[in-house]
Length: 543
Image (cartoon, rainbow, N blue to C red; front, side, top):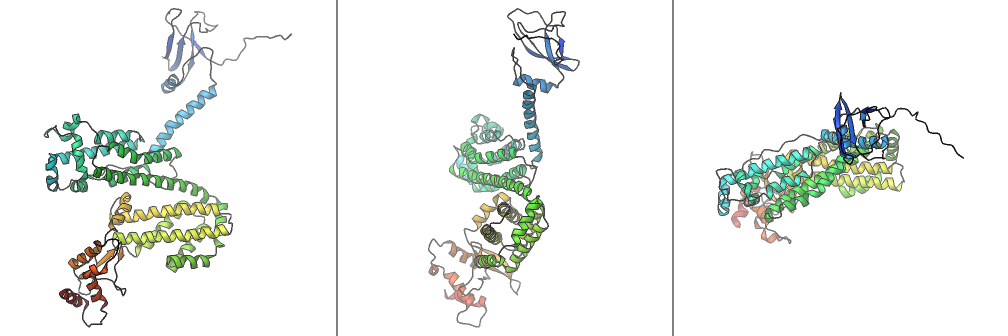
């Protein structure tokens, strides 16, 4: 028969301290409490039939004592409840507490990674132009001014939520402004304005062109949000948790805006949803770019991988790539050769991601330098053509690496994805700086400008007089013989541009009499020995 021997010689594990308690009935249970005794915090619970210490001569109940901060004690009380006969391993409690502290610290770290930004100042529109629009609505100029100020305050509230990473609170801020009750109309409109005007009656102001030009600062404000959340697209201190939060927030933006504008006019919904869609797209693009940068940084920091990339790059069939891509893209052969040489040297020198970024910015500056004095739409066309050429050349390189079963194919594919995205980002920055507009609005503005041909002052002639050119979708209009369509009169240039604007799906050159006459005057098919401006004058007189 087995014999079991019990002993009470156990090492001290818990520290107990006698606590005097009030007399309670046998069925009464005392809730846990926190007692401060000389900086020692004690979690105390008195229950019926609770165990007592054998060293307690006064037959008082004991409580577990631990030295910890009040915040830790409060966390224990909030997350756990005492139970007789049950205990948790200390490692489980410690792991839970570490995760809790890590979440708090990660939020603080994410906030430190955010950028700075303030709500842009709103320029008040020409209120006299609003009078005709406001009068049928029963509103006054003061309503418009108050509405603009209220909108600015609402943007400040939204930005504060963004800085605190409280993305769920953005919907409430928008709802409080766009769907506010009539009871707050007096506060919004001011004491000197009739409070019968409901706040929702002021919403149509956002659809007025004159008002929108003054206070529709969505592009500038959303650009501030982008700069706050992602101050540097190549930053290495952006946590994956923050990236997920930003992407989830971006996916919900369009739906939230449609929800809060459910009762707004269609034009207001169209304007607001269009701009917030650009914000959503930009946030998702920039977070993806940051993710690619993090992955590529790990590749470029490994010496053996960059060495293998250099070896594989030197084995490319460069002549074949130049022949095929050169015929398709019609690029400057010298520029392509220089880019190839620089790329190979950067791999050989094992440059960091930041050094690669500086090189790509220098490339973009070199490409755009030749047309720095051109209109924005022309500059945008040059930049887009460069991006297309870069993409085609890089695809040819990836194709050659694939056919050769290069060991560094995966690394090159990752680098190519990053560089394509970063070059687009740089082009947007350069165009925004050229136009003095927010980066967020570049795609929409360049697309809008290119819808119609425009006449612009382009250069000066020998007599120091301006002549004008016509741009069709950003491309300079030329005559049938390939000469530039230079027009000495701005009025005539605008009339020719209007002829092109009135064309529909089918181009009818017979309806563009002024353009045809200008073609004839410049090309001079009969070789008449007269100045072009005299020929233009003669053609106009004949017409």
